[in-house]
Image (cartoon, rainbow, N blue to C red):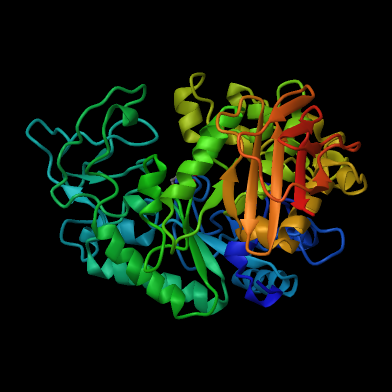
Length: 538
Ligand code: NOJ
């Protein structure tokens, strides 16, 4: 493969920006688009950049912020707190100039209850937009139409006193679900896709897309064992309905009518097999599989997740991998233990040497940790509701730690969430200047991946059948083979390989240790404590 054959979403790395926490350009305590533009050099286009190929921006549309932007009040404009449409155009120009593609987040399962469509819909039963949402009669005794539960707690039906019907909301009651079975709704949303593509946006991340359609008859979901109400049901009728495929084909045809556009979907419901059904031709380019976010720090679990995902994704689809995002605790905190930075390096090597597009969550390149928060500081609705069993998602949404100045260089005023107390030592500025920092290691890994056809596209083959302390695998392309070995433990390991790869001469190209110890001798690999090593066949 030559440099010209590179496909950005397949061969590149995508950086996930939680916009309100990335960089504050107007000192109101919230991250925004001008702030992001001012920091694009961190991502690509300068010799000191991380070296990513695209960014995915969390929702930037007008929103009452009941779910921090995932409750959209207008799909075709920008919330003034984040900037203007002129700022979006400038972002596209500045990003493209640096070789960065831009993906927006499309939240098409539900809107805000303040969206003008819903205001009209709830105005009266006769309103032309009534059927844009899912309204139903109560059962006798004003009982809800079925047993469906909301992801964020409580039942998924809200009674509307004025019009004497229930409406359905899979998330908060302030996030009513759109009725995808209404052709006018579908047309409007597909036109919204065209609107952003015409502006020059390179693609989309689709929020809970597999919930767009619900079973037309809204039957009860069967019960199962679970902790929260939502988990106490098999989600047979509220998600993953067959009509999805036809809608994805329509969306894909739109994307394909523009050059080099792509979409990645957030599926609902666990399991790689289910997720994999949604990617491929006439479907999505990629679909998230959240297996890594659930894996304990155990090489056997990661290896199984990779093998299952590799086997599940069809030949015309493409895998992607993610360790952290705005909905799960940061992996530096999940796995860190007593050696957070050493472990974060092994995790980085794991993520960036897979056959599949890596998604990097902002701040993971400097090892950002979950925010320690008191109950009174929690903003996230499910966190408020379930504290202390579940503390919500604020901890993983902390302000980006740019430098050691007050507020971590994120803002000149108090940020919407506190900055992590470790910011004076852990920040971009300090790590950029240190050749042995985690940031420098991410850069080196990304550079290696960019230059190596084997790391980008090569076949995955595990070399240890039941890994206990370390993982070792090949990434084999026609003209190049890489061997990756990852020590998950704090002690030196001598690991015997079950499969001894050919050829037998290997050259160490990159180690996570300042003084590398990795070596391959016949069927044995030596690795230093928490060492991640990438070799190439000599
Ligand atoms: C998934 C998003 O990632 C999450 O943050 C949001 O709360 C729900 N979808 C609802 O939009």
